[in-house]
Length: 473
Image 1 (tube, rainbow, N blue to C red):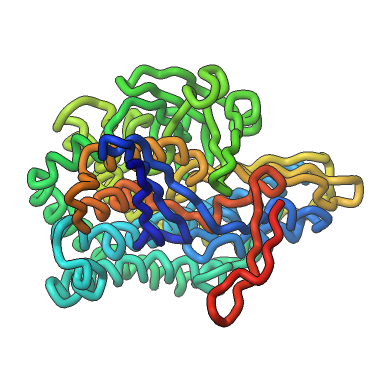
Image 2: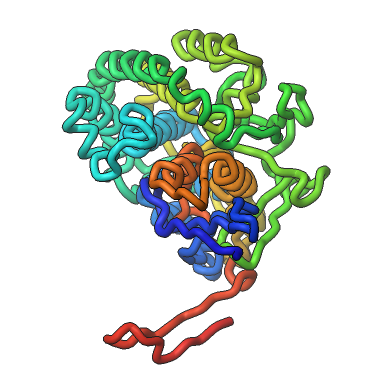
């Protein structure tokens, strides 16, 4: 008889989700779905708020990547004001964005994924976590904590606090960087390089033992989307959208982020609170694309930083220019961390970042603004429409994790079909399904905003566990 295998909750991710694996009458895995079961609805909460409050409000979306939302929101506010921010403000924004990527990637790689990579997919689940990693390799675990601390310290210095900073604003930033603060941040750089060298060596040393997982955990052709600068190099803060296919052919280039709605659509399904974006020319679901570290290293010609460029060249020499295996999100994350440290060092050594002119004073000049930047998990769009008083009439947040939603679901299904044997179920099989999700490092708190499009159910549970009442939409 047919049955359903449920993984609930999915562990070592940011947010709450479950996986349903559907088994057919023959006892074989037929399909699988990744359900995002938390609901937040920030798009509706924004309505009626003054646009100049949005960066501070948007930083509350997530405790892991608040800076990304502050930046996209601030850039949308810049567009509503119709201004270009001062050079010192732009450099501060670039600096804090690199710090955000560094600390978030460090959390993903060292805390969430390293237990699988260094201890094995089938290792004891009671020890396959950050605490087990601390026991097994305390120096490596400590270095991961310190690397993340470096990124968080930059966010704290610029933003005033590590979580939910309210430092960004339409027209610039709210703080002037001091020489002492710059020097403190520079002092962390040598240790960061050393830690990343160790991390690269450790990952490369174990890759050969995961060839089955590399081939069958989320390995399929898709489009890849990311921002590049005018030279086709990595640019987390600004640039144009480039889309390549699974063989590295450029499908679209020089796309204006402000016109994202002309080439990116948003679908919804009844079994998830997360949107399903797609590339419009190929329709839904054929227009599946991926964003984030793997997509970004696939779309760039080069990183634009010497150390990261060396790692990118080696990464590409192993097979082809474009890597379709989701397992390689981990190595792409390390490449981006190295790029971030190099960019941080360059920005801190630029005297202009210490200038005191950090914000443009201007009134509202436009009724609409779009802000785009690269968040740790991929390209992020904030789109605001305002009334004559500058209050938000409509907000659309196109989140990186939601743009990976189609690919995550495909990866979950592919992994379940390959590794899950319903007749002889083992914990390691299900861990591989979860590992397919962890490749994308989903941030589900950021991604569940499509109110009114999916069913909502509220149950009142009595002390004995019985359902006393239920309201459904």
